[in-house]
Length: 529
Image (cartoon, rainbow, N blue to C red; front, top):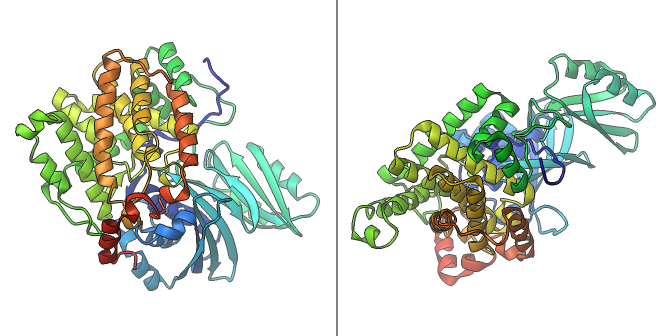
């Protein structure tokens, strides 16, 4: 393998083509839920009271994105695809959970999507957790009980609270002989140790830890998307961090990008699990791209609903023939349908985020139908898209709150462009050229959701993402190369995203969201209270 040493980015393909989730936002709904879900695992008893401190983007758009419902749902133990998330407040009242939201405001020194979670359980035990939603449903725990930690979910994690006395660390490390990384933080007479392990511990390990002298509490934390079979230091041809390493793997193995990604996933999670997970993704994207066309519904905010059906109606008429053509028209209709489903808090696949979830399935399914590809070929194309998304997640970002809409729809267009190239018989090099071209043509795209809702302009931007993917794929297949390689373009996108002011990064405080017509429509919505 050429290129820089691997950092073993062991995120599952189904954290890129996923999670399967209830809309409307992967960062503000699914990611927020996961922050609360992990926080709740730190207490043994039933949580009776919780306060959520919302920072930055969370503070401004939490109602429109359903962040408030998702956080409560996470404490209650619901998963990202549970349609009961909509009724989280009612469920909390039924279960005797008292919840409060504390709007903290803005702090540029912390992540744009940050929540502080303070909990009390029925035994009187307390815990304070800071979670950060990183985009695409991914998250990180950065503080526990006032102590800075960095629990990223790359590996399974044990958290141990213990007295700061001699001999405790030795006892812990002796018991955890398989531990691969150890950290300890002290706060007065209390210490907290974090162990990142090769896999989930045996069922007897946590009870044994809790019985050790001077250990107050121990729990196993498994962040969604963490690796389960590869351990640190294990190298494999199918593991890659960037486009250069990905091309090396394709050449070494004689496989397409999608096939390399499929082999990689099988190594990470097991072949049976990988096949089942991809089958579920395929089932969900077929449903999400067609049901809203057959049965349109108004969104929660009332700003969209029925647009996909209008576009689909033009697929076989003169309008389509003169402009986008039937395949791209179908792709656009399907992409717009996904945003309609998401905005009703329906189940979708984030690809790589909820706000950009229509681009990849719209493109892949429309072209697959035209080419009459079988399910295996479609899944291979989806794996190709996931490989590009993984690289962008590793080298740049996919969260609108961090990088603007270029990080969401731009990344999705890059993923779709590569998949289209592969489906049409292009080389891995051409696929990466198409991805780079797509990124370059959407560079600087701002994230300015009206009212903080993932409706306008998000739905139309998914249509534009489809157009960018189609044109970029055709350019690459025609032999046009991108002057700036994919890896460099990813870094360019990240730097541009960081240069965008906070008003243009998912806060609804700038761009289209502040146009008079948008403010008027927002005032009539009522979702945000």
